[in-house]
Image 1 (cartoon, one colour):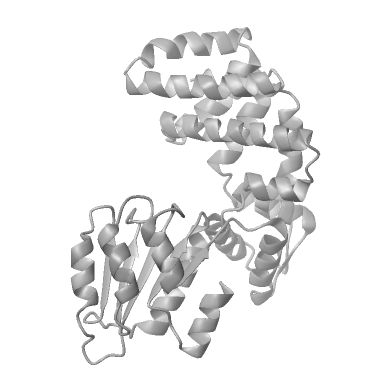
Image 2 (spheres, helix red, strand yellow):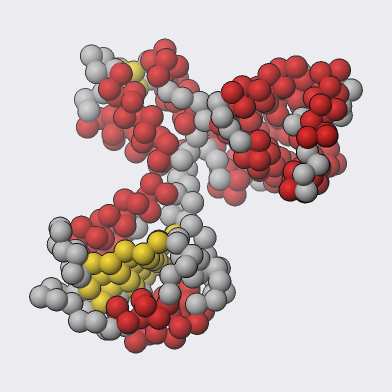
Length: 335
């Protein structure tokens, strides 16, 4: 990030940038910073934007070879192309030859560092990975935002706020904006205001649901599942989030068993440090075998959904959950 800030400050831009990673908020911020610095507002002659998996490489190369029209440079923005996961031989061969008057900005969710295009961009331009931020950075960022608005937040309110929002900066930004507006006449935000206005993420309900099952509170787990359905969450998304939570539990249980410290676990699991302790307690309620079986059952269940066999199994699973006879390791099948 500092490297891009330096490029903008000096006006010495690379011919190609790749912005990638999980943190969508920071990717968007730096994409917009680069565009603001390089593209005159309203200049449609020298700025082109592409998005999606069906972009023709040849078309991009032809455009890159076209001289800018009464401007210093031509800027080509390419988003979610998949070029850095799949083969992009034409572009990989062309990148070292990009004209000085052309700048590519690629914005991607995922990359494969073995990819030829990735390697060429690394040689010829600048690559920045935007990862989820840790507790300390998020706390400073939220504190800075509040300070600009002339407000403060109690520690208890912050902990509740970040528990509700998770560590996704896009979501934090939205919820913080709501909270600031809601507390317009207050200098200090308390936990009560956070509880009143901030929305709990779906992931948090998934966590509560699995925690309820780990403590053999099956009815509460099923109630939470029905809450998610009421909120119009698609069952397949719920299944995906449950699988992801169990994968995190497996990682945390393994690392905890190896004596790894909380900060390192937080970094590897992609969660705030305080959340690690909650997950460690939950993981302690499962054996490693139960966690593995839950993940395996989830994958099998996904196949059942795709093959159209899901409906026949829902009633049976729910009935078992209600009766309390379903083993906690198989809780992923509560659908």
